[in-house]
Length: 75
Image (cartoon, rainbow, N blue to C red; front, side):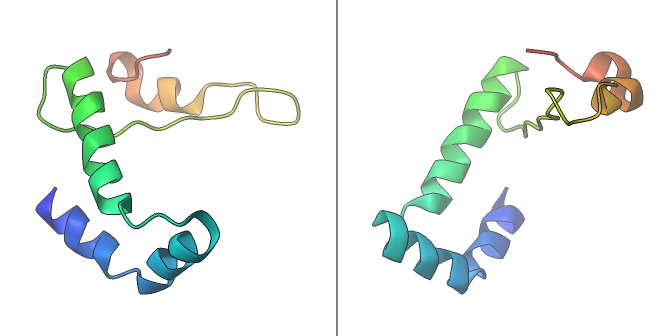
């Protein structure tokens, strides 16, 4: 998580864009809170969530489930 935080902080242009368009500067804190929330779902300190859009005009096969098997939690 520390490496991810350091890398995210390197994206100065993203920070500037968020400040300009949304008036927010807490994106690193938000990233950590979401990581903690996802981690709680699998009894871990941190986790990541990925979403594959399966709706109209998107592939209908669930690539994440095919690749990850039981590690993929379909919500």
